[in-house]
Length: 295
Image (cartoon, rainbow, N blue to C red; front, side):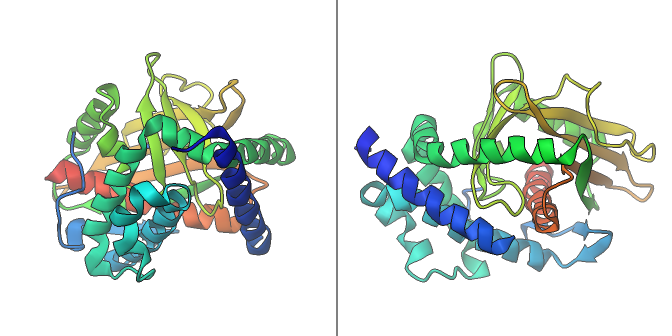
């Protein structure tokens, strides 16, 4: 059992390692069933305006799977050793192992449970909240945007949005968390907001924030009129302090299928590495969500 005393010792170690790494570096259907890593077949992903090979998106996810597994196993060796050994014994997970690694990570999160995850990550959440407040203050009301686009040769913009919103309203947590290794908890609260605990972008610490999809007036992400279907929301800390926002837009394509333009606002003072990495985060999570919708 993870006691308060043992947790405080372990959390201090996690935070110290993550802080040192940060200093040196400057959001029903699950994904547990084994599938070929070409789950993104039929998708075209554009990062910073340039199309990237889907294998690169899978490779990014592979690396993050190892990081997430290491984070969980650090504090739950006895409980999760058998579940996560396949990820950590080799350390480098081959692309062919991605489906099995996704499933192992999903089982690990379920075994720990939401309360256990919050306890495990508590030290990181305290540090990242302080960093978020500092970043917002240093930015003076200015924002920068991580933007990724994904085009699908099947499905429709409205169909995907209906699927996406249904998962949010019904609090289908497997849909949300399994889409990216850096997702730890994504839960719909009684008031309709989403609680998100994840590692965003190039961050070295997990963070907690709350997305309000009804607060459209304060969304700081610019709109693109070429994309008529929109999901927007403001991201804030538990006390309501705004730290960012999202504007995800979609349109149907003339030849069939649909295209998404995914935008997340971060404080302008954050380093470019943070924004660059979050483009890949968006490519991973939305690529997996779109693939799940198309299934």
